[in-house]
Amino acid sequence: MHTHRTSLPALLVGLALSASTTVANTIAYWNFDEGNAGQPFFANPADDLSGNNHTMYGADLTFSPSYSLAGQTPSGRGLSLDTMTGGRDGFTTHPTLNNWKPLRWTIEASVQLDIPNGVMTVIGRDGSSFGKPLSDFYLQKNDRSKSWRLDFCTTGGQRVTIDSKILPTVKAWYQLAVTSDGSTVRFYLNDLSGKDGYREVGTAKLTGATPADNALAASGNNWTFGRGWYGGKLTDHLAGRIDEIRFSDTALKVGEFLKAR
View 1 (cartoon, helix red, strand yellow):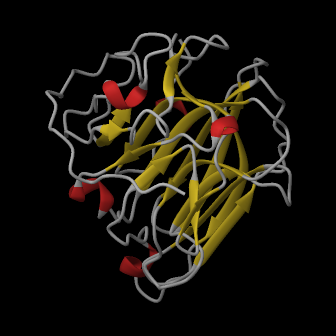
View 2 (cartoon, helix red, strand yellow; view 1 turned 90 degrees about the vertical axis):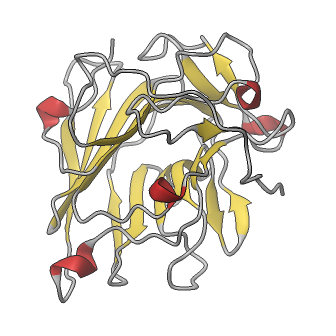
């Protein structure tokens, strides 16, 4: 197990988004194009292209992923997260993002798996707002259903789980997008090995007593990329690569999702 540092040097960030990815409601956006193939991620953290200074970090040489050109990533380069050596991941430290609990939101990521079996979390969140073993958020490949899964908690305590029923293929790239408009959560998937584009693969209704109860829960801890959290332990590391991660504070439409380049 390793513990991430939360006191890291500030970096100059705030690069402009390209016209194809500019959305007024972007909270954070990382495309990992600032690195060089094979470079340790902790030595060159990922700039937040939204301009909000939500830098993504790696812990140290042992637990940091590296930049990779492997697998023809959607943006040309990707963040390699090699769990075969004990777990490598990225994380955030900025309190604004770590306390982010919007009513309306979209989270997107591109991911490629190296192995077929095991629970592997693409995007997670350390801690539980309710003192439970389960984290406030998981976007993962789930071993029980064998499919892509969204599993998160609302401010009002509702546990929302959507299984896509799509079984990932090793070495194929997938774009995952999950949205909430405050009443309905939708899960979309784009298999980049085909030409079908994004398709809706699952929905769930939010049932909070008030609209505010349907907001995303937040314990104030790190967002994580390439692993999950359960019962106080760092777990469910991803064997593969992540690219093109974006957080938005609105429920984007399919035509507004990130496109593969």
